[in-house]
Every structure is written in structure tokens, then in C-alpha cells.
Length: 87
Image 1 (cartoon, rainbow, N blue to C red):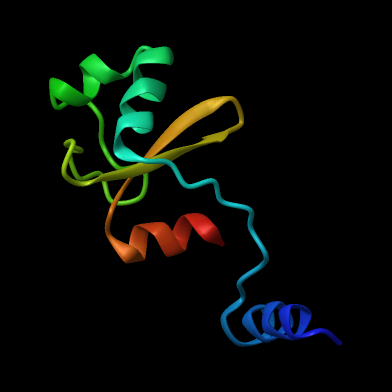
Image 2 (cartoon, one colour):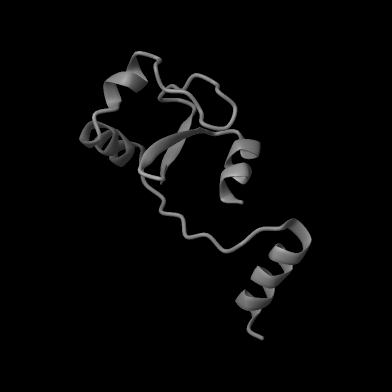
């Protein structure tokens, strides 16, 4: 078993994690993406909330978003929220 396969197996067994592909983007790119999906104004107006904890999102605490069942789910920077989303 290769090292990366072993690490993924260990994560799955010990913590229930499964391998997830995550794309990382820069802050400027996030702004561009939010513009493209017509959500930048919502962010700036305080209308977006973390899909896990409900905390209002700002430019300072938004970590990104995922698309689940065709709906955008935005996430704060809290590690608990990020780990819940990864499961």
C-alpha cells in the first residue's frame, strides 16, 4: 500500500474521513466567482450565512463555498464547519 493510500485508509478508519478533492482559490478569485454567481452583493450586504453554523459571512471570515444538490452552500473559516462539510 502506498503512503497516500495508507494515510487515506487511516483517516477513514480513525476519523471517518473520506478522500475529498478541494479546489483552493485566492481571495481575488473568490470575489470574481461570487460576482459570477450573483452573490457578491449578498456577501457585502451581510445576507450570506455559513451553511453549518449560521454565522453571518463577511469578506474576512468566508472560506469558500460548495455546490450541493444544485444549491450553493457558503462556509465560514471555523475549522468545525469545514470538517463537517468534508465528511
